Length: 245
Image (cartoon, rainbow, N blue to C red; front, side, top):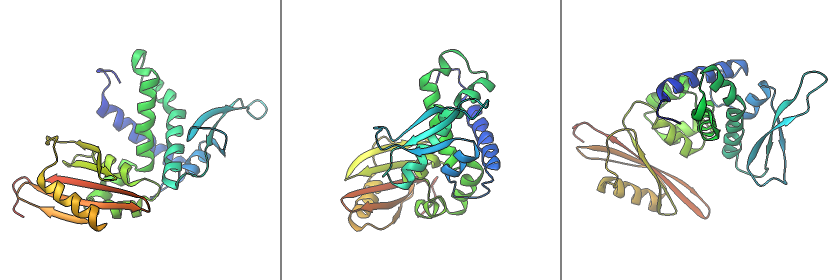
């Protein structure tokens, strides 16, 4: 989005929209079922084995004079978290034009790239609503395995990425098959992995169990998301602000 786009204001507005949508779907606690949410919005979800994309938003003929309706065609056979993300993303695509219009976003900000970014923002908050997710992160001490148990329709990676959007300082690093896949921070942090992060990751990678390490600067925790033929590890580093280990 353009430099004039107020990201914080947009996030606050998205959070309010999400709360309204959840109330409309009568979803009052986690987990969020994206299929149920789509139904509450009058969006038809159907399987399409012929398509190459995971999901696509379409316009369907309306009933009598009601006009066209929105539909989501999904490619079957994917894992549940990916299907819920795909539906949530297409819901975001569905409501993005109305959102941008109400926010009076015009010109280059309302282009396809902006709508795609907005759809991603909406999808993440639909599956992990800030009103529930933020207090749950605090209550569960940011433990990704416990958060995953509470929000099973969201992937481990989405949970970790959403934690970066909260106020607590955090560095998230994700490894796939022993290689660095993702590294981002919401606070000043080294681009390079610290020795403590490397030590934590290496033990998680070898053992397949959660590990925690501390020094005078960092608290580092790692979780293994291991499957047959595939190993992923998520490492979260939190500045300790000079606290002793």
